[in-house]
Amino acid sequence: GAEGASEGGGSDRSVLPKAPQLHVGAKVRARFGATALGAVGTKFYPGTVTRLHADGRADIAYDDGDEEEGVDPKWIKDRIEDCHPARAAAAQAATVGTVVAPTESQAGLASAASVVGQE
Image (cartoon, rainbow, N blue to C red; front, side):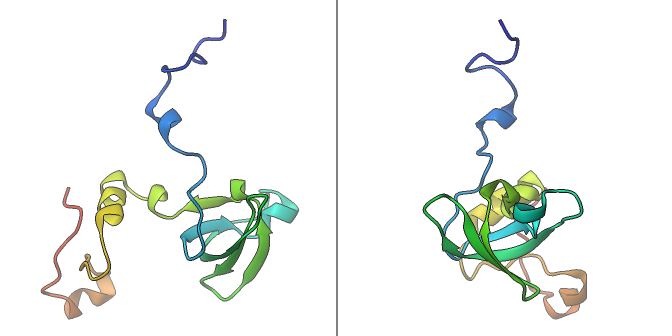
């Protein structure tokens, strides 16, 4: 038989969903243009799901103002999954109103900020 193909075996990666659970309003990273052009020459950009289609495709409003309709879910990543595991856990646990670590440019403005996801 094929080694590594048995159920229950394999790496921890096998238990993670390949595609994020998409819903309208989900913050994602999507590969702009890849549904039409393929991966070559395209990049992932942050955006928000604006519509879900019955076939699993999604419309994305990118943070830079671009929009794309009918993006294949294989070209969509959950932003939280793509970052450091400790930060991902903290981001998933965060709720509206949670204070998070500021960016370097904001550090002077947020001296009282609490840090989420201590390592």
